[in-house]
Length: 113
Length: 117
Image (cartoon, rainbow over all chains, first blue to last red; front, side):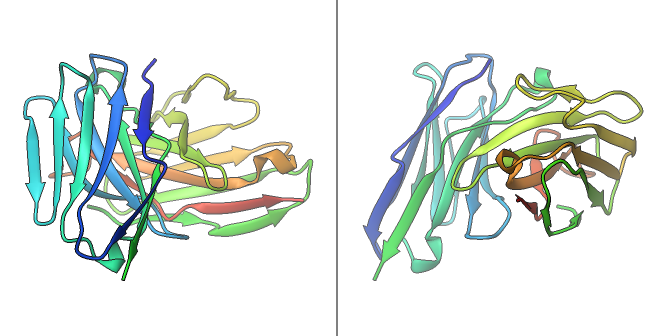
């Protein structure tokens, strides 16, 4: 089955700096890659996703890039703010498996003032 | 997205007992899933809840321990049976195939925090 690795496990940046979180996946058939943000005590919230037919997607300060050949995808957050502090999870799925998500291990992002 | 609710939001249970968690969506959805999130960990898929048929379980999860029902397109239950302290986790339902949304996209319920003593 699919295996998703995520790095780093923790990341501390100063407010205004950029943050990058990287994930690799094992199953070349995977074609959908969402990112979730989970604040303490809250549910995971979808913040951005990308499908295998595109290489990059951007939504304001958040962008995701996908390299299908290398089987890795990354989350980029620019101009970080304290409210960006949370745990971020990447995930991968293949439509043919009823869209079951396999999650990475998570990255705890701390944005300091 | 949709409004997804879970009941109970939290519970403290004695070992050996069972707890049934409910997940309700305010619109019909194609897919419903149940995940477990152990303290400080990532999310692990327990099973896919299939409407009108038996759930599809992931490796390491069995029906006797985690029976699941899905009687219609808006509701599902997960039972955690014969609980032990190792079952202490957050249990989350997720839904996919929302109206006017791309099928792959999944949204999560608020979760049920279970503590087993």
